[in-house]
Image (tube, rainbow, N blue to C red; front, top):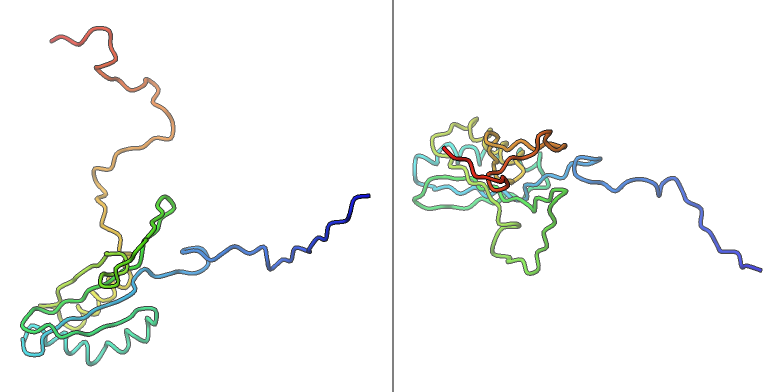
Length: 166
């Protein structure tokens, strides 16, 4: 007689899918914002105003982002966005020995803040928060990719009996 195998019941809660970016939850790619400014230069005045009045609101609205403020003496103010690894369905990246001195994936975006009003600085910070960290890809010059083969085939001068003579 065959021994009965113990079977476990399959519960409905076990049939749920794992959370993925864009499926159930959104996982933002930005990990850190670094503000660098000078205490003395007048070009950093609006950046200092933003840091004093609006930075706490940004930090409370985005608890997943680490916010660092550094002094950058005698230089123009900047904000730097550091991004986590961007993985698409076609790429899988393994990091064997990550360098702690560098960014999370060596991907950062730097925006100079000199010449911006406080509202302009808010817009640039929001742009960094919404960005994915991926390089900007040109939308023109993209080659057309077809799902079916061409009806007449692909012509090549190398595959003819006699070369074309002018």
